[in-house]
Length: 469
Image 1: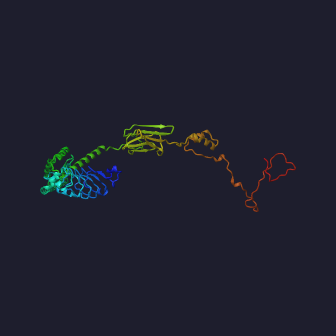
Image 2 (image 1 turned 135 degrees about the vertical axis):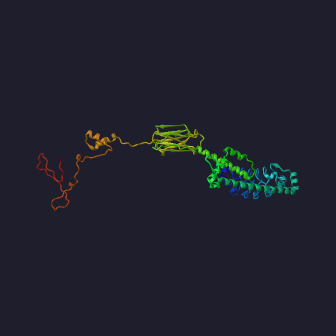
């Protein structure tokens, strides 16, 4: 909380010189003297602080505002050496003699005690002026020189009267504390014995009373009496009764009023949350069908850029909305955008690439533009692409066989061994019948003489020369 109130100091609290912690329902002063040693101005008005504490280390503190709290004694400010102004307006300071503790604050010049019980004491102003000779303003009124002289002359008599009134006040205050404790104990016991009925009112739990253990007749009589006694008022009447019932102005009554207002606020917020709670909107059906929705009710346009092969979505987001409140999720078949928790979802006309998509925000109009490239190169098997390959590999086939083969799925490549001659690798090397020759000697086979004209007498048949064919 302190760091949040230090925005003007770049959220640094160690060098903070001024901080405002008013209206924060603070019930105890703590940590501030260790975190902010350089503090000069501290605002703590309109809280529930019952005691001045943990401020003695603030040597540089000049102004302390504790108005509208539950402080009863002025104490623990001796360490605030630089204190110049102290505001205790509308507190419960009844121990006026505690003002003398401010004598150690030699730089104190202004003091406000308006609205405290001690201001009603006879001789209040004279006592304060005499106790604090360096004080220049009391309750916003300047202390003149003549007033200071008169206060110092009759200080003993004024002090005696003030102390008598203070003792009477402290006795009355002790009775108020006892009464507040008894009231709190009675309310706690009553809450334990009561139970909520079907109509929202509270009824005494008969099972926890002695009548619940008695006979049926006694139970019936007890129920009738309880029903008559606990015909509770409506909520508005109970609220009116709470605020119109006279009570003494004490720290306990102020805390009680604060607790009552806090409970009313929480109940109101809880009721609003229940009203706001709606059934979750169906974005994708059980069978996987994506639905279009526009909860933020924004204008949009969906176009296809054929030149760049992309799909463009232009969503008219509010111009001054922070970009951190927008969340974009692009899927292959749809796009989903969350604008301040409200869903905008649209089905895309073609499949897109989510990892290549981009989201941009216009600085002039605030529109959100999604650029989504379409998926390319989808592989499909067609009959026309496979027919030439079949004709090349299967040789001469009849048209009926081709039609039958093209209609079959899947298509396969088959080779008919009867249409092709295979090479006999076993006869490449021949073996001789004679065992004298080597096991794998190669022999040359001489082709038979071809029919033709006879060779001349000078022709020599050289076996190393291949025949001319």
